[in-house]
Image 1 (cartoon, rainbow, N blue to C red):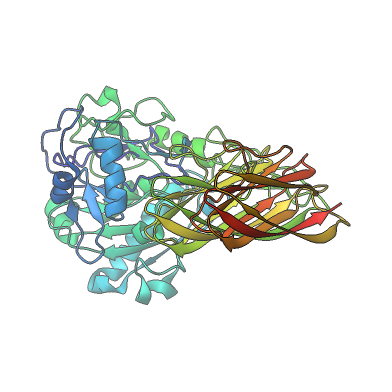
Image 2 (cartoon, rainbow, N blue to C red; image 1 turned 30 degrees about the horizontal axis):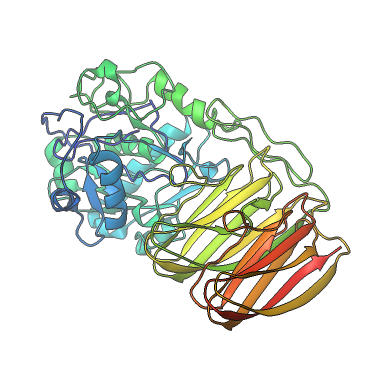
Length: 528
């Protein structure tokens, strides 16, 4: 489903199976509002509206602080709101329900355990909401290979802070902004809520089960069907991928947007076809990714929505955790580990945990280095605490980790992954070496090369006086413009912690005097 594009036009139109499927790291916090107001839709085009004016016009939910834009699109905080404005408002760009260039859907494992609670703050309506959720989730479960699991034991503490469930269902007072809203699979836990405004629901005349059936489509990654050009009205954007031909009866299509369905929001044959394209048929292999194989086994077949899951890791693989520290300026990227990435094993887990100060943003990507527009995981939270937990896809053998400064920041990053067999030392010798020297400003000194083992860790720690700069490179001597690590900090305290890339057996070191300096350099590594 894709989100309503225009903030001021609150056409709570239909969602469609054109899939505005979002991906991991994406930005979109869209949900859907079943509001029945029949307001005019704004033309799509450029906007000269300032961010300050955009922020003032955005509705902010009481208590949670979540912004609502485009009528029913939740945005977690002002940091995400500014990104939304920069991406979709300032230049009149398209609203995309994708993240890092990929569809946003639940993983093969998560789609079978989409847990939720229903808040007891519904009071006398609690039982009715539980029943309506059961009926609405059953509609999607009978259409595709997904499982919603109600956790009644969590109802008394059913809030956005409850990490024991995937999402919470709670009452809200939207101030007339919407009947209900939901979320997309890649939204942060704080925004993974289904919120219901009973006052607006009763005025609209829409049945609770029907509204929830539509909202749950969003929780699976689907966008509004009426955004397609065939609808003729209620256009939102072009940023979607069609799963089926246009369906004016779709559960994701608002009736007032030239839809031919009604406010019962029932799934059509094409809705079911679209759901199965992403998640597979009930009880079958997932469209968004097949089930992974056992140790050394093969992955299950995926549907058209994505490739099958990866097989299990081969014998001899080693799971390791490596720790890195760095600092980063606002707007700049730094590599975590080697710029050549981490050698990983398909079908195994990769977990990257970041802490620190300021507001650094974690980026992870398989196959190539991440950018601001392309990544496999980007939590994009306020503050320094971020985590990426991923499964290495079939055919991918390298993972790249970077940190970008939203503000100037420091970060500590722990990377836990499984090295392929043959990349660890397997009998190498833990070795340390020290070097020291003094440099005039502009002078440099070279050390090494060190004989190293692919897949092992290389750590260099420098102290001293003045302002020496450390350079490290695998395979050749580093230069001012070519290196695998260069902290480039003020003062003499610098550290490089790297993983020796596959195929590399030598590490070259250099120290350059930014100012008159002395240095002591200690190297810890595995020698063959």
